[in-house]
Image (tube, rainbow, N blue to C red; front, side, top):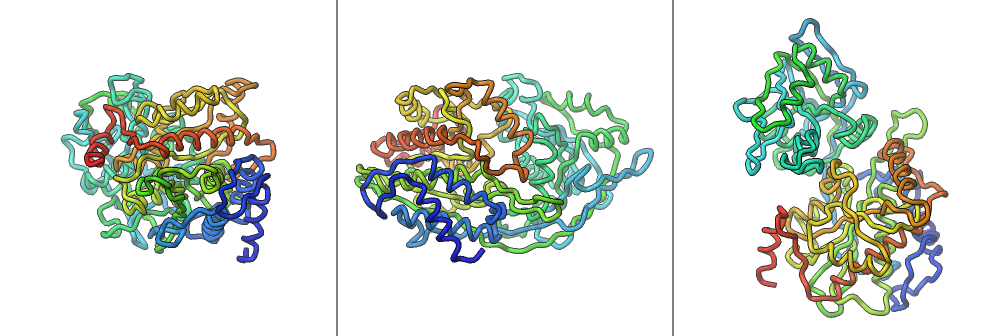
Length: 549
């Protein structure tokens, strides 16, 4: 698409606004369905190609968001620019790496994408494991503060570890083990691969299981094939395992059978503290060929300057990226990412427009941050957290949007991580004016708190809240919402079918955006500094930041 088309797309989106204020005026702006719908339809259109970092779709997306910010009267946040460059490395597995196993009654070989998905995070044209000893390490967790170490007593240097997904708390549903049903960071796949590398493993294989993973094998196939992005590491990934990957439950069963081991019994044993890793007496051989290139992606950032305390900043954030286009798919290979996260990005634009065109300017400054490469492991937000445009100690707090309500108004609003910070009280106050109540994460076992961009700021101390759509539809009830949610997760999450649907009811999203606006204003128009609650792993960092406030 040529650049002449982009202004037309932007104008089309903005002309949907029922009350178009002059650029930067004080005429109050009303967030509305027509404008939000137009943003979502444009950003998730086939022309944007699934919005992959480093693609033509990124160019269109970044220009669209920056253009919308400028049109709304939002200031550029990065020294006169709306963009913050984010250096990334793209590593794309080429061909179809096989996984060959020896040591059992007969050799085994597992097929790429059907039985396993392999890749590497090393910046190398070729990486491999050759006759690498397999070791079952349970959940692959080393948590000294919990007295838990699945690697204790075994040296896995140069070996390939086989790991269970999620954490023992979920498996046992015992609140005394980790966080019970609620996934901890130790249950996340990225933690498991990083810990395996810290232990010196040459290879790391996570056993996929749909329920504890929180997504089907199709999501693995879509998300870990094609170009994978990572931060640029000084050692070019040499400290990471040579080969990483997922294997299906069926593949895992074949491995354990070949090893003469009872998979279910060992998985059960791994749920308890003191589990000892088990050598499987099998070896693995795999070779991964990769195309490696460096890519400069971009976060998009605009802000509204505070009228009273401009040095203080509140951040609204959403990720603009999605998975891109898979040319190997026969038919529609565009991962449009309409719900995930064209809705959140469109909502961010609407919030920016509302703040820039309000009769009462915000007292603190407000940052609108659209980040890249969330789907690749929260890379854009991690880069911002390490290279903030506004000091983190001056960042009062923030709100993250990752998928807005597309089924209409609700009596409630869900909060992933409810109870973590004092921001809950501000959201509660704003929700009360809408006659709504807060409910906690309805699927804590899926670890959503660790799977979206707020986490990167949270772990550096900034109080962040991650609200989501409610579940109790005002006229159709909870069952209606649960069915739609289950359908999306089963059929559309991280698939090409996540497309805009004219049957969507975005009035609930507008209700939520007004809630988010009002919540922000309660913090922004005060001189209070919200903190994490007692017991939060982030509170100590925040306490240090607030010592001079």
